[in-house]
Image 1 (cartoon, protein in one colour):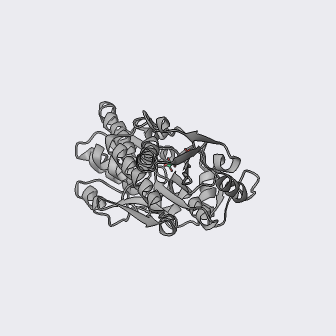
Image 2 (cartoon, rainbow, N blue to C red):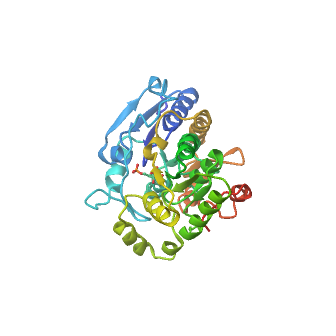
Image 3 (cartoon, protein in one colour):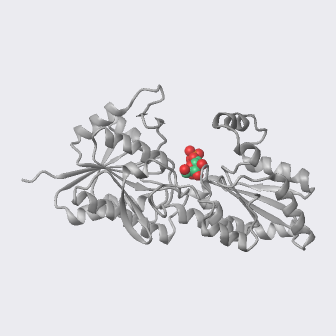
Amino acid sequence: MKRSTKIGIVTSGGDCQGLNAAIRGVGKALFQHIDNVEIFGMYDGYRGLIEGDYKYMEAKDFSGILTQGGTILGTSRQKFIPGKAIVDDAGNDTMPAMLDTYNRLNLDCLVVMGGNGTQKSAKLLMDAGMNIITLPKTIDNDIWGTDTTFGFQSAVDIATNVIDYIHSTASSHSRVFVVELMGRDAGWLTLISGIASGADVVLIPEIPYDMAKIAEAIEWRRKHGSNYTILAVAEGAVSVNDAVLTEDERRAVKESMKHSTISYSIASELESFTGQETRVTVPGHYQRGGPPCPYDRVLATQFGTAAARLILEKKYGYMVGIQGGEIVSVPLVDSASRTKFLPTDHPLIQTARDIGIFFGD
Ligand code: F6P
C-alpha cells in the first residue's frame, strides 16, 4: 500500500484573526484531494515541534473553526538569532530537537503560519533540510511578497470602529485624542484605519513626526472651527529627533521613557504645547481578537488551499501570498529576507494628504 502523506502544521508568533480559517483550508483541501493523509498539529508554535508535543488531527478537527478567533493549536513567540538559530530560553539551538520531531513523524512537509519573525525562522528550518511552506499572517501587513496578510483586514475593521466611536466623545468634550494602534515597524494598519475613520493626524514609523508641527496643526484646526482632533498613532511611531538615533540609542530612550507607550508621551507633550485636554485610547490586543472578518475568512481559505496544492505538487520552500488579486507562491528565501514597510510615496499616503490628514512632517 502507498505510504500516506504526512503533514505538520505550526501557528507561530502573535496570533491574529483567520488562523483557524487557514488551518481549515489546509486540512479540508488535503483530505479532499489525498486518499491517505496524516496531519499533525504542533501545539504552541515551535514549542510543539521542539518538544514533540502535537495533536494527530482528524478530518472532523477541521470543521466548525472557520469563524473562531485565535488558533486552535495555540502559539508562542520562540526566540531566534536572526539568520542563525531558533533558541530556547537558555540560548541553546533548538534545531536538533525540531529535526528529531520532523524525522520521527516522517513528515513530507511542515506548513508554518506566521509573521515576519516566523518567516525568518521557517527559512532556518528549510535550510536545515525540512520541506516548508509558509502562510503570511499578521495584523501588521508587513510581510514581503504579499499585498496583504490574513488578520490585517479584521484589525483594520476593529481599529476603524474604535476611532469611529471616539469622534462623539472627543467632540462633546472638545478634546484631543491619541488612539494608539498596533504596528511596531510598519504603519499599514494605522494609515488605512486612520483614513477609514476620519482621523485628523496619522503618525507612522515610516514618517518621523515633529511635535511642534502637530501642535500647530491642532491650533490651526481649532482656529478654523474644529473643537477636537483625533490622532491615529502607530505604536512604532517615531519623532524626528529619535529617528536619527541608532537602534541601541532608541532602545535606551524607550527604556528611560516615563510613559508606558509612545501615545502617552505624545499626549502629555501635546497637552503642554496646546493647552487642550488630551486623552489616550489604546485598544491593544483587542485588535487581534475575535472572529475574522469575511475578507480574512476567504483570504485565509485561499492561502490554506493554495498550500495544500503546493503539497500535492511537492513544491516546497515557498510562502503563499496574494499579488494583484492573484494567489502566488513566493520563494521563502525572498519573503523571509525583508520587511514590507509602507512606502512613503504610497498612493494612499497621497490620498490621505489630499483630504488634509497630517503626518507630522
Ligand atoms: O506582530 C503583531 C503584533 O500584534 C504587533 O502589532 C505588536 O507590536 C505585537 O504583535 C504585540 O506582541 P505581543 O502579543 O507579544 O505583545
